Amino acid sequence: MKDYINQIIKLPNIVKFFLISELIMGFGMGIWNLNLNFFLSSKGMGSAEIGKIVSVGTFSTALFAIFSGYFCDRAGYKISMLTGCAIKILSMLITAAAASYSILYTGRVLNGLGDCLIMVCIYPYITSLVPEKSRNTAYTLLFSITMLSPFFGSIASGALFKHMNSYSGLIIISTLITGAAASLRLVLPGHLKGNPSTLKLYLPKRKFIIFYLLYEFLGYSSYFLAYSMLNLIFMDFISISYEFTGFILGLMKLTSGVAIFLVPIIAQRFNRLNVNTNVIILLSFLYFIMALTSGNVYLVLVIITEMMQCVMAGLIDGPVLAKVPIEEKGSFSGLRLLLINVGTSIGILASGWLIGYSHGYWVIYMAAGILSLAQLFIFVFGIKDEL
Image (cartoon, rainbow, N blue to C red):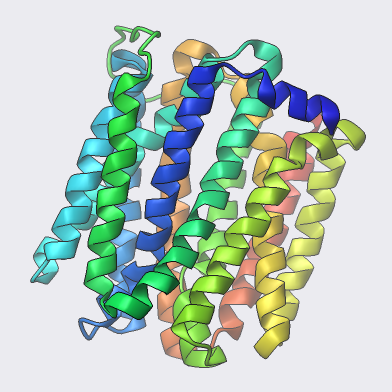
């Protein structure tokens, strides 16, 4: 633990500054994510309609993923990141002011593009700022902060709602905070020049990378199937208050962020691949149990399974990225983002539809458990021996 803390302290100041900007942005997005479904619900939309609107953003991310990866490799990490931040803020303003379905869908499409341009570059960017021996530490810290910061946003959202009693007001506040965080990134160095390559589809040459991309697709499908409608499940089926919903969702991010922070320590003491295998097995089992539970037991299992999903990502994503050549990292991230967001969109759509169809949440956890078992098979037989 002491060595790990020393590694963090020795990280360059510019890396710490970037992490602070991510902390502020995550705080704003914590407010946004908690209130978006409520904001849409306040306009008279049901769970299936909300699922369609929210999934548009992830479908558009998938649509733009290949281009964004190419743009990142060609223009450089910083330009891609700042362009994505500007588009994302514009999309949030459009969504907050939307007076029709067409405007909502426009906002969600732009949100997907903005997310895409940001996500293809932030992990390659932060790892490019540190020496090779510190890259897993920087990667894990960034991942941990993206989980921890929404906790504080969710807690703040609950407190602000008591005074404002307005979902649209909270949406605007989150947009302003996100904009402030994006402006901090203007001073970050753009030290890596773009690669002047022609636009082409990135196709991985190694089989284990193909298995990894399929693994990610299944993982995000099951994750968003299980978690994308949690706030509505909490209030409609578990019958807890808005404030307690915000607390639980924030606590999920807090425990997950702490777990990810501890992943490097776990990896030093145990075999990270065996740990990942055991986590997937236990996760699949708990999903099946969640289909049969309710009340406080269900809430505890939601927190535990969220934490386990994030630990899985922290255990293998960094080592996989390290095996990709630097001139292909943006394109690889674009293709990965394409499959992630197709899986995310399928998970969100299926979650909204299945909850509406079954008038309950048991079926989404049965399906998530089956997808996790498929993910386990791919990891054991297609990925594990290559890392």
